[in-house]
Length: 493
Image 1 (cartoon, rainbow, N blue to C red):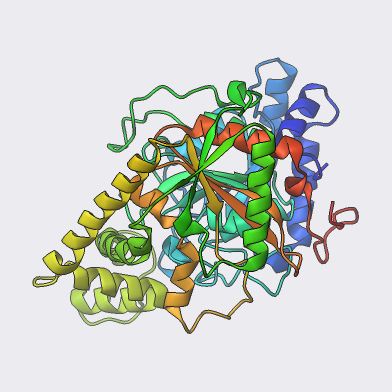
Image 2: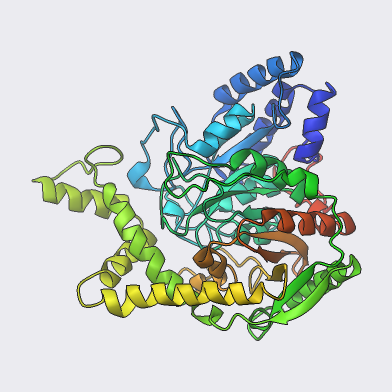
């Protein structure tokens, strides 16, 4: 069953090939057998089977939606009523949310079955899924390597076929980078397309919910259900949501793809550069045209991001103080001592680093020099995209400069770790939709991702181009061999 994609499960459930309970039990067994990947923080077996039984009733009475009965997983920063929501942090290790995030609510209404909550970098701060209080997640393609971050648990789970789809979030590349490292389709929609209500905030002006899936068709089905206006989120857009599924079969003949020269220079691994060039040729064979574009301020994207994101994080994370919920230190003398010890014990090193950076750039004397300047650069980066889109319909390039690296390899060099997002964070700074799709493998048999960036609110074009590419290639069909998984899970196809 796990070799089927989400859309195939949807058809099989309607044709009574198997029930939602049977499908859910199958995935729960796979999750149990692949614990070494550390992809899940919480497995909700009892709740999943209860939801699957309800889904089977909906299917029996012809009350089902396209996603009814299909198992999935949530990244552990989406609040889930009655279920632990930790954000991968000790400070929330005992927090059980009293409500559902809008994304959780919407997918529950569709009849999807929650298998559990996936591991993640602490408060989504990281590019390797090594900063989690619950330990590093391992990449199913090579368990000595990282799956990417911060949505590494979601990516590892879908890549290992422990779930057909999982929610994720992207602040500077945290959907696309792990999707590239794990050989998946991952999409970050336009800022405001998906509600952030109940999604624990890292950097509020950059965070956006999305998902990782096996292919563009599956991604379109789930994104359709996740999207839409939410009055509880002040940044949610009152814009109609297109029918993403209807446009997938449209020809991309005549579409113009912009190739930023800044994405194809030195610093990109040779195997990645070759794979991306081959992917571009595949798109040209489908009738697309290419044109060189310029994103001259892309080189300042990393420093711009690492001023704005920590600044917002230092404010957002001030609410975690041990008073109302979450972890509280056991021994303290007064209120200030309780605050200090709780936060010192509850936050990990990377979170502390970013809070300190954020507090510094917002402090008197440095606000104008750093934060205001970063916001001006952000506007310039967005303007670069606007000028580029006057010449093209979408932009393509590598998702990452390298493939998945060895666990621990970059822990002593935060800057080297941050540079993993060099091609991804500009889309967040500009609020644009972007996705990564599988485009090949390097000489170590590690997946390579092709990044597509679209015009604001034009997820349809990205999904159509991705789907047409996947009709001509089979990179998205490759499955890693998983140690200790049930029989039939291995192999490369």
